[in-house]
Length: 481
Image (cartoon, rainbow, N blue to C red; front, side):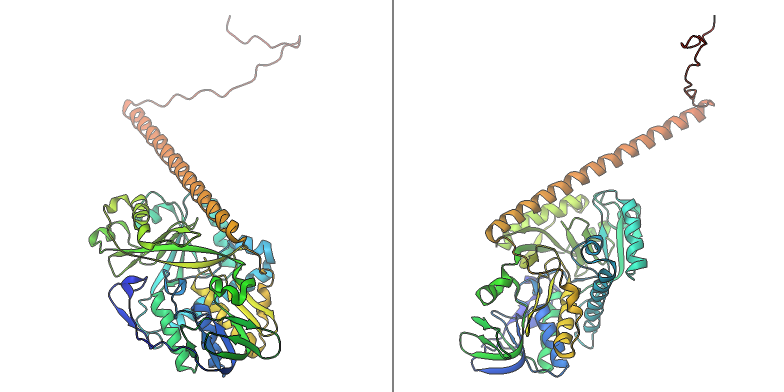
């Protein structure tokens, strides 16, 4: 047993405060419960909390500790939607089911906001607004997207022209933007700890440092084996993503592991206010950079990623270069801390939510999805188990698809690098065209000013007229004699 004080400077939370965690308890005795959740990340703890609130006896088994991986190392952005464009979602499941899925994602965001109230989980430093900016000039596409989200998907959203984006973010790297005023961000590490505390108070027994060795999902009562004890449950929820390993190889093999690295800068003082006035989170349309202000005058910035584990500190230089690329006026930036977490990314880009077989449930694949989806999945599975809610079937088209093993990792990294390079090239071309248009407008304005000063008009070339045919089938000679 041990007690841990987690300094948030070692993660994505408030860079001043600390979080005191309760003593860790291992499962050392046999146990029988209604629901067993494997994995104490955001989705797993939410399932446990909601099932306990409905009266079920619940145990959570975690191989390390609550929120140790991606669930405790993220930027805390909460907004509607999923990790794929809404158009792709409609193409996959149809318009009506896409609307239902989007509604569920909105409910997930509302759930997080409700838990983030100071009288429930205090100290989450909630700030409103999320801005998605485009690397290229995509005004026409923006209009149709805004109409669809606002009119068909009941999402509060507004479009920002490039000049407004650049007043808010002092950089020429971005053009148009999509602003979600009801999106928000919180201290993600404190949030997952707060959920776990609520779950314990609701009667959930959370066992840390208790890896699952095997799961026998046959029969009415499922059997789970751990190093020191056995557990039986009517329902088992797999919420451990890629870390399930041999306990559920079928599931873990469907996820491509992606390590995402992020950093918190040293205090930047007034320099930060000069280049960024937006207090919400900012992400680019290609998913390369994701950043926001924390602690008043620091930047939290997520950018590089790999498909293998790496040392976070070695990524500090790459993050520093990205910040300088986007905000050159910021000058020299010192990195105070770098952290990382591995996400499980599905082949189809959507989370895996639902029932694999009677009594065996899955809540995984939340890489690139956002906090709203893990909250949504937790509520949905708890209601499915205890209330017969069958809306999990909306996720049936997004079945378990093998991610390709080692080959998939190599291919995933290569594809990611190619997409980054393509995005950079497209952005460079877009900025070149913008500068060319600017030079042309300047030239035309100078010419007009010069003509006005000289009191003359700009000569205009007469419109072209085709020669008139003559009687012999040739052309008439219209020149002067």
